[in-house]
Image 1 (spheres, rainbow, N blue to C red):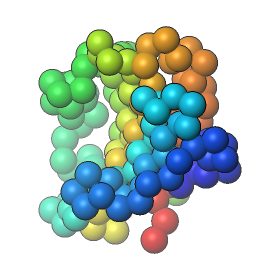
Image 2: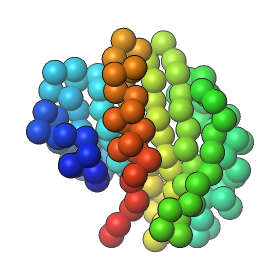
Image 3: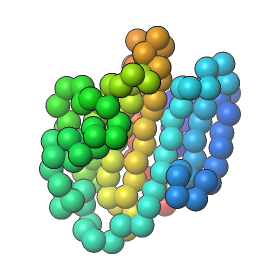
Length: 135
């Protein structure tokens, strides 16, 4: 989960809210800052590319998450295809990565309000960008 990378000593860890997330870290000082990992069963396809291409999926996600920042991208790590997105809304910023692996749809997101985004952006990009699902 990248615990060493995000410095969780300053973060509260919450586990297992069924249907919402598997693990979530919330900043003790600023509770609106969070990193969340969620999974759901997904057996339709072995990879996220079969679900939709990154720009199409990004446009669909933007309807509920806010405006897309930049162009969604696909990348591969450890043989797994990931889609990376960044959203901006009135609430703040979110970085999201998604993949399909071992019959699960994996989503890891990091959120921060606009006022702390510049300070958190590099940390969150590193945490989310280095995520690889392990079972």
